[in-house]
Image (cartoon, rainbow, N blue to C red; front, side, top):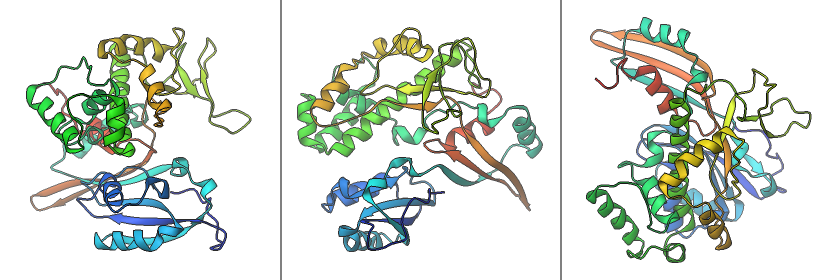
Length: 354
């Protein structure tokens, strides 16, 4: 599913595209840390997408040809299967190269298949909320709070338990950061890619709060209303152009929303911004912190994300083998979307509170 933008000419291209098969138990972040510990700077490699460790995953990796032998040797030590896909000029390398992800998921002891089929007929999966998945927040659901600590320099409004606070400071102290948390101290002690990872998790948490707030106000997820951001698929320039819905709304346009970050400027006339104006003060978020980080050499951008999932080619296959029964789901999701969220919406109890 990688866009075919790489060149066939081996001599002219300075980067290599690799296709990795990550075994169960190895995530993209594990490999990033592994490269970092072996003194490979992040400017010399780029993973397309973040893969979870609790799955067998296909991971695309782009590397600087100068580090080809070293990186291949490191990957072989992890028993990772490697296939060279092609070659590419550095100027063409971008995280937007991945368009979709293909998932094959086996669900054991599922609800009756007729119930699942009826649910999918009644509720279009493309109208399900595009939450960031659980894995975005870490095994103990602390990643976003660590990001909050970092961004707000320890001055946070989130209620956390004592054991959570201890776990957070144990992680920070492992990098040599004491309880005096400042952005200057953090940038001196913690690798930038890890700071970005944690603050990105905090951005994701706030975006999830935005979707929940939208649902709480009974605003539609599947169509734009006045003041919504949307992606103009039909512009003449064939470019990524975000617009704001007015009175004349194309029903084909689906709502998008910004993630807060550097460059985000809220406006009262825009629906998502009004919702953020309710959320951010309660968390004590000061947008100027992103500008401060940028001036210190770390850019954490604001960008846009669709409010609903983009699901394609969804199919179900049922199996019944004596006492064992399972469903296999095949589907494609847009870049940055989480299969765990789709599965939760399909298989969650009718009455979750019970």
